[in-house]
Amino acid sequence: MAGVAQVSHSVARAGSRRSLLRKTFENSEFWRGIVAIIVFLCLWELGARSKQLFGYALPYVGLLPAPSEVAVAWLKVLTKPGYWESWYQSFKRVLLGFAAAQVIGIPFGLMLAVNRYFREIFFPPFEVLRPIPPLAWVPASLIFWPTNEMSIAFVTFLGAFFTIVINVLGGARTIDVRYLRAAQSMGASQWHLFWRIILPGTLPSIFTGAAVGMGITWEVVVAAEMISGGGTQGGGGLGFFIWNSYMGGSLPQIVVGMISIGIAGYLSSTAIRWLGNRVMPWRHLF
Amino acid sequence: MQKAAGSMDDRRATEGSELGKARVELKGVSKSYGEEWERQEIIKNLSLDIAPGALTVVVGPSGCGKTTLVNLIAGFERPDSGEVLLNGRRITGPAKDRMVVFQETALIPWQTTFQNVVFGPKLRGDMKRKELRKKAEELLKKVGLADFMHKYPLQLSGGMQRRAELARALINQPEIMIMDEPFRGLDAMSRGLMQEFFLRLFEENRRTNLFVTSEIDEAIFLADRLVVLSNRPAQLRVVIDIHLPRPRHYQMLSSPEAYQYKRQAMEILHQEAMRSFKQTGAFRSAVAT
Image (cartoon, rainbow over all chains, first blue to last red; front, top):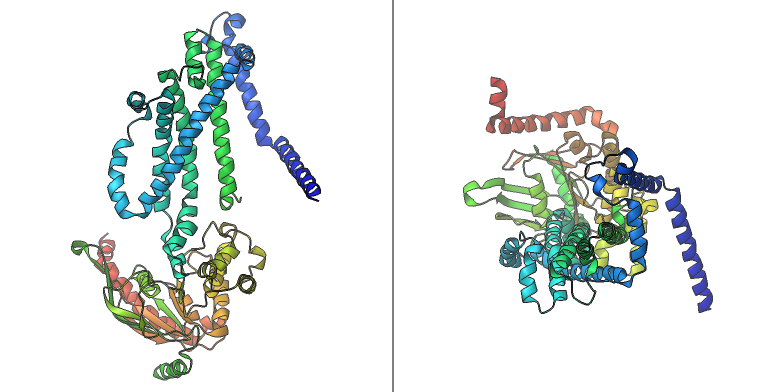
């Protein structure tokens, strides 16, 4: 019986997946995106090959490796475990720092918003530390933390932390007082107010903070990997992959690293958007 | 006018203890905002009797402190001096016996219409689940939202939102309903429809009602008693008993009686408006230019 239920369940899922694919293919927005990328690649290819075609190089663009060269370099790299190891390392660091920033930042921001004394004590030092760019923390954290890995994770954490806290605080403080009052009239306790009104009311800001924070995390992790050398045993991450390619003088491989980071960042923010839409169904109704 | 007040007193005596027939009294209530050096007096020595089972409408120039009055009765704020009594007991905070329907809408956006309606009883746990569900569905049907139960507030039209809010308030069986310019922001057509709908609801079981508005026609159309407030700081200017028959229809608004009431109220409101105009110097500068 259980088996039958499972089978029908997976059939239903496959069905919905297929319709999702079909929806994607029938979506003109999707095709416009594809065409835009193809046109962009063509222009880049033309620009990079302009010397062969027209006898003179376009400024700047002419110095870039052509996308075809990049593709070749990429194919070569795809089979090497070192490349995938870089992906894994960078993703691990980003997710670690990002998760820590969420886990600490969301409660911290909510506490700042909800409790006046907490805000009066912790907000001033927070505001002094906030303008310090995460990368300015790199030397200090390299000295402070026992391993390179920990210092990178710490700096990534900082990158997302401040943005998340500011967003959560702002979001929680701008919840319409009428929701709170209506709930109070209906007999809501402080506990109810927090879980039923303040937290869901802050969710949009939490996701805004997460989206922005995720972007900063990728910026920071790449820079931190370049500076610190990203660990010794080949676990350099994508930042170090680029740095390494630069040292080795492989221009196409630098671009491979750059685009890899672009894709990684895109995947991350897509995941956040997807989650946000799942968690906040009331926001995407039209 | 005196006679009508008398008949209202009789009703108060017989029905005063019934559910939804609370009596609210304000005794010498004053309220100011701000620190000492920039203190703004909002309400000054206001005494007011909100009769049980009647629809009391408060009108006053905009910004005169009507919403503050609502907040005091709802218990969101405390008076600086004087007292606000519900059935003789002093009001110390918000509670389910006083439900407020706010300006614009205060439906919780992340809850469906149904979830909004059952919010209060569910929190308090004072109804069984099945019973609550039945009651909520009943109420939603009554306000014509049975088909929109599982929609979010943003998916409803303005009029639907107000009706959902009425249902959310009514399910808590309040002693008094407090309506703070509830139909503001609706277009003229839905406003008229909402007024009639609201009247039907009220006339059905005559729950004590305080209705705050700045629209004089709306006030006269709805009211048993019309309370006209002065400019800020809000003081009682006059109480007019409205003797239009119930059930009411919008045609009554063009009757000579309604016209008389309107003239009476407009006279005072106009005086008050002029006074505030002169206070702010706007009138003088407008004349000068």
